[in-house]
Length: 165
Image (tube, rainbow, N blue to C red):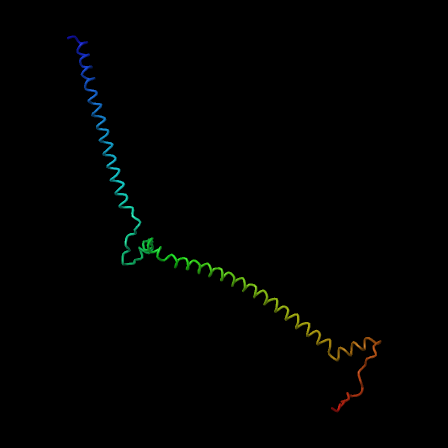
């Protein structure tokens, strides 16, 4: 046989072996796909087991670390106490609102008290001015200055009139 015949025989042998190789590769791919599916199923099962909505049980000891870390605020505890939190928030909002309103009222009261004090001082000064101008000596001086007035001081003492009943 010549070299050419040897090469042809080898090519034919390779061609004969190729379908077997292709079948082996297809079978290997199917097996790998089946293994991957099995692995995916196992992984999903493990994730389902670990991803539960239940919280871990709270340790009976309450330490500073658990408080600062927030570990004691588990979802179960928060769900049980949700109305308490709502009431606390409402009370806090009411406290702030009432305090603000009280401060506003105190400012208004202070302003009104200062206005009242000013009004009292004005009334006192007006009253003292009126009292001073209505004194007898000032009235007499005003009458003397106005000569056209017929009013004068009486020379006789006042009479007491007794009215029988």
